[in-house]
Amino acid sequence: MYLLTWRFITIILVALGLTMGFAHLLELPPKMQYDANMYAAVTRTLYRLFGSVGAFIQVISISAAAVLTFLVHSRAAFRLTLLATLSLILSLLLWFLLVAPVNAEWLRIIDSTPELVPKAYLQLRARWEYGHVIAFIAWFSGFCLLVLSVLIETS
Image (cartoon, rainbow, N blue to C red; front, top):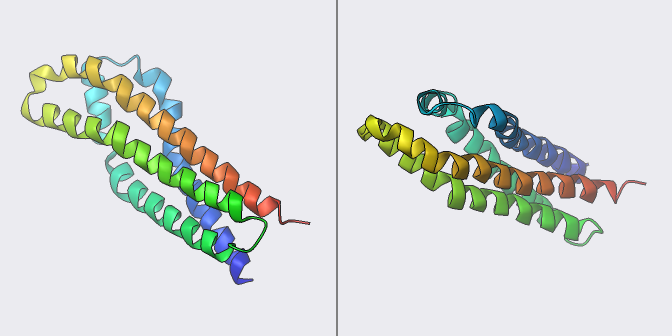
């Protein structure tokens, strides 16, 4: 029962972590059409809780998946659970490598030199948007692997 409960909690947390990346994916087409000022307004206001609540959920998800990996170390689900955990870690790593530097630069420009917003918009938006897509793909892969790890042990 303990393992079943831990699997349930982990799947729910990872699914919640998936929602932010999926939101970015759905927003991508219209946001790529925004002018610089609209894009700045949206990115400056809409994502405030993504960084605090979202980051917390993703870190807790990875922690839960790591514990789950340990709990299933002698079961058939071990390899898939390990791959799921590694995919989640990869997603967060990709976010730090691709998106976080853009966040820092974008906020610096908006706060210090707003006249550079149009130029920065053209230079930064593709990396920010597609960086989120790449991180989402890794997180979604982790979610799928996690669900498969449970399903292979279901009779």
